[in-house]
Image 1: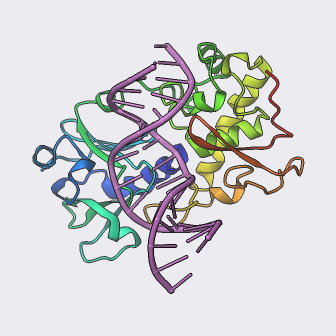
Image 2 (image 1 turned 135 degrees about the vertical axis):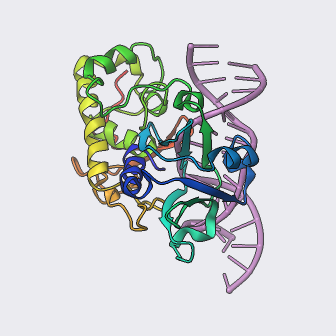
Length: 273
DNA sequence: CCAGCCCCCTGTCGGC
DNA sequence: TGCCGACAGGGGGCTG
C-alpha cells in the first residue's frame, strides 16, 4: 500500500531525526524480516553513521559508512522514532528496533510481516534493475512512449511493474489511468501518442497530489509522527466501487487485473482495442 | 519473454 | 455473538 508518495513522506518525516545519528544496537523478534541473517546484520550496523536518507522506488534508503540500510514497508510497514519508554500506536507490531546514539530508537512496525530490512553494499544489490523515477525530469512523455512499445500487456499491469516504472503501485496506477481516461485492460503498446502524453501527465499529477497530501491512509499507512495522510480524500476511483464517477456520474466498477483489485469508470475509460 | 499462479502474513469484514 | 472464509496486495519465485 505504501507507494511513492507514502514512502517519500516517511523519508521526509524521518530525515531530521536520522541523518547524522549513529546506529548502536538492534533488536528483533522476527528473523525473516531481516536480510541478511539477523546476526550478521546486527553486527555490521553497529557504530555506523547514517549519512543520508532518501527514497528509491518504494525503498527507504539510509547510506551508512559502509553500505546501505534499506527498508521496504510493503503493505503494513510503519517506521518511526521514539524514546525507549514512549508508547506509540504501532508498537504491538514492532518486529525490529535500532538504538540510536541520541538515546532514542527507530522502530519498524509491520503487522503482516511482509516488510523487509536489508543491509547491502549498493541499492542495486537489493532492487535489481528498476525503471525510471516518475517525478524526475528525465522521465519525459517521450521516455514513457519509448518504453511502452515493448509491452504487449494490459497497461495496468505494466504500470505496476517496478522494472518499467519505479514507485507506482495499485492505488496511483488506478488514479492515473482514470485521470487519463484509459481503460486498465488496454494493451500498452496500442496507446496513442495523445493517450501516452496524457498518461505521463496524470501519473505525475496523481503522485504529486498524493505527496502534497502526505500519502493515503486507507488503512495501515501512517506518517512517522503517527498521524494519517489525507490523499485518500481526493481519490477519484480507488476504493470507490459503486460510487459515482466525479466526471460523468457513472458508478465506479471494480475488476481484477493481474490479480489486483482495479477500479475504473466504464464510461470515461473505454476499452477500444 | 510472458502470463498465470502461489507464497509470504495477519487484521478486517461480510455472511450465516 | 461467534465462527469462518475471503480479501487486501508488493514482490520474489516457479511453471507452462
